[in-house]
Image (cartoon, rainbow, N blue to C red; front, side, top):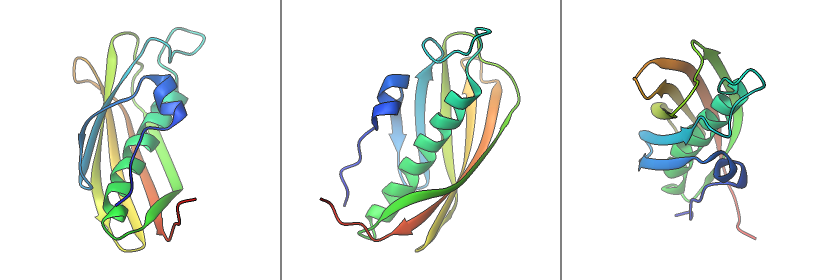
Length: 130
């Protein structure tokens, strides 16, 4: 099984994992430090968060097979803007296969309002550490 750790970008953005399994990963991220020039939560920050939690869940699955994952597709729809507080991203498995994993990621604000819906697909691959 792989040692799964947050990446440098995730740490800079303040991502914190709250729950983790191949089927579901939940994480939070502060709005502060992740805003665009108009003072709203940056859409790219939400996509990066979605990729982080979706990939984390896929890697949890692939590690049980002795493999790793690489992202092959992500898409996102922004529904509303975050302004303050934090956001929560929940990745839910759509498919956990031997070669492909797909997750839906829903990002909400502190009031539970949906800000973004994303779908990420990861390819399961052989990987050697080192």
